[in-house]
Length: 403
Length: 105
Image 1 (cartoon, rainbow over the protein chains, first blue to last red):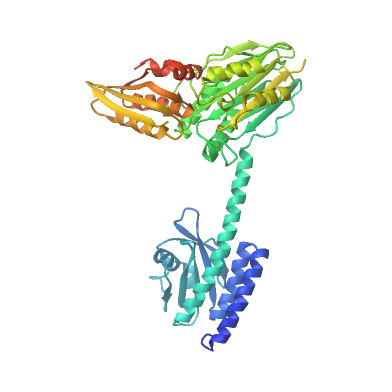
Image 2: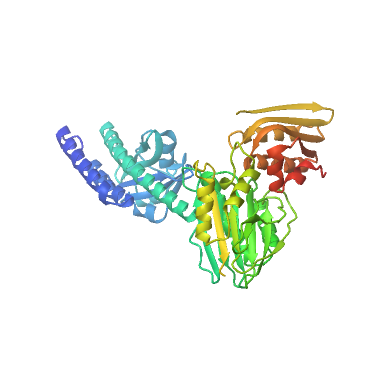
């Protein structure tokens, strides 16, 4: 019992510390908090103990762990910060004790139904930020002492530390998973085509707004995409993910690339008002002898006939996607001989601050000739990026009709 | 190299003169200047003079296009003047030259 002597308290606290430290490495967050609450109840001689954590919006508390009040967690009790008992503790960021609970000072009907009479709550603070509330309750009326408050604060600190560590780990894991999903995937094997690609993100975060895509449509046509969302880093990558996905959906509906890009444009203008992207989209006929190409402000696609050097395709560029409502779009038909090669790229490959982009494109054209797809990618990257690391994203895609 | 912007009005024409490099770091300033010119109640035509621009990347093109959209929404005329050399090249190759340089309104 509290007050029986500081040695007993110190021992109990040490016991608590041991439990917390060992549990950190073994238990999941919810289990750890539940364990902690069991000990707190014992220590403070309370009938209930609960932890509520601030949600991602920062405006509500969510019941996360409870001892004696498991219904709170099961029923997903949420409390706006500033309302109810826990909400008030969170808002004031200081301990609050209530001797007699009633509907005026408590919002949570479960507390009242269970028959809680007295409550003591303390804020959980980590790194100067309020991340939750820890409270204990008793069925019999109770005047909580300063020692009770101090003990609860100590436990709250331990719980905060553990919570913050776990959440950071979860955040990082979530970020990594999201990043991976945004990276260009493995290219499918399409009969009759030799395909290869490279992607180098410009930003430290490892993802960016550039992408390439290639897919076999049910009709037998093959969609070939290169794109560049304006901006860089995670934000551009997230927008890119949506655009990449939407293009695929529209590609299923029509084999006309200008039509696909127009639909994509409409969608982007409505749902991503500030986004802009350049895209080159080619649709290869099922027999591979010709393709339709549409360019939304993208740099010229390169083509090379078997055994011949590369040249730029004469496809007139329309406006980038997201630039202007109702922008007209055109498709250009291009014939391809057996063994012909295509090379698509983003401006990171050819752009340099001190140099005209035409010079860069000329250098690329001079370096490339029709070859196995992977060789073309390697040649392009080696030629254009020898003397510097790319500061902008670089994505390249090479496609060769198998002779 | 820094970006320098100056805005002046001549009758009902507002001209935003742009000098220097427009890239991710400086594009925000350009966007603000153009938005302010479009919002100017006394203006019927917004002109963006890029003759002093040394470098224009996709972010810069985006800003110029955004200005055109905003001008359209406010019923203003809008055109980009002074595009030359590598700036004109990059506007042409991305298919935005006619759209920005020719006053369609």
